[in-house]
Length: 393
Ligand code: PMP
Image 1 (spheres, helix red, strand yellow):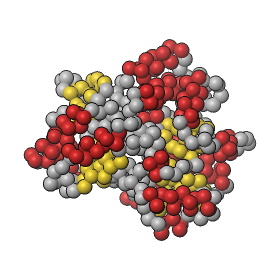
Image 2 (cartoon, rainbow, N blue to C red):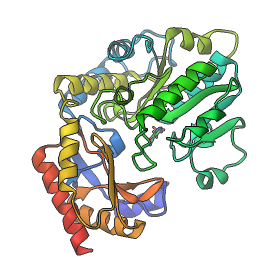
Image 3 (cartoon, protein in one colour):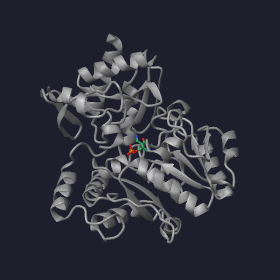
Image 4 (cartoon, rainbow, N blue to C red):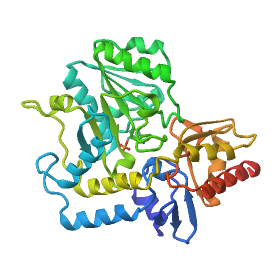
């Protein structure tokens, strides 16, 4: 059997139609398959490789830290300089009150930790989340998932969860003094890039403040520069009580985090009740990699041009078969006539060396979320292939 057949036989899949492309090398904006075919990456491993694949500074940081030490002891016991210096760097670039970082292995684990933290801090039983939201696949994250159909198969789920409508003012009435936290994506990603209206997200912030409810913003997908500012919440002019990060946070290595004030975070850690425990969360090699990626994002000024690059995509994504493009910076959903048309377009693009896919809750939309270093020429080339696909299929 070849590798592809072995993959299908022995590696568990997440869908019944995996892409099953075998990539043997990746660097910057590109990937190469076993036949040497080159792919321009328009999805960055789903918003992970914001500074590009195998950034040299990230690779060096991984090598150096791996030679120094890897796992020492469960999270939070030893002083580990990669964790300390990355936490310091992140909090230096966040609002003053977001000054305490709990590192996890993944986005979903950060979501779990944040929900537990909100319950401990407020002593309240309920969590509110939004329809069309995705926060991860663990049982708690699944319970707040914004799609009834996807949730149903796994009942019983967590009790005390309320689902609200994003960008809907009336929904905010459901937030009460029993609500520990509202969790929202700063821009809904898997819903097909739904950007919150400014007045609405301010009303959400105000309602949380008025009811003593914590506002948790999930920026696993939209954080770290993708929307044209370092943090997506800066686009809206509000601040969360708890911020959730993942994906690009590890620069290509697994790393998540939930971040709050020291005062709020303390409620999760103080004895005698067990707080949140992880063996590998904040792994020193992953923190070293993440810190190097974050520094590259700053040093190379990658966030500065995100909006201009997004605008260039919009300018070149003109085709009668494109029904709409929803976007903020380099996070875009290109809406086509149907899933079938989208799938054929994506297949054509991949066959012609441009890697893209669709969204979990918007299967008629093509995803464009490339590494932030994409050049003008690469944007024009990608749009040409997409429009050509729409002419051909
Ligand atoms: N939140 C959002 C907004 C996400 O997009 C994702 C992953 N797609 C997660 C949380 C979960 O992250 P992970 O897959 O690392 O558990």
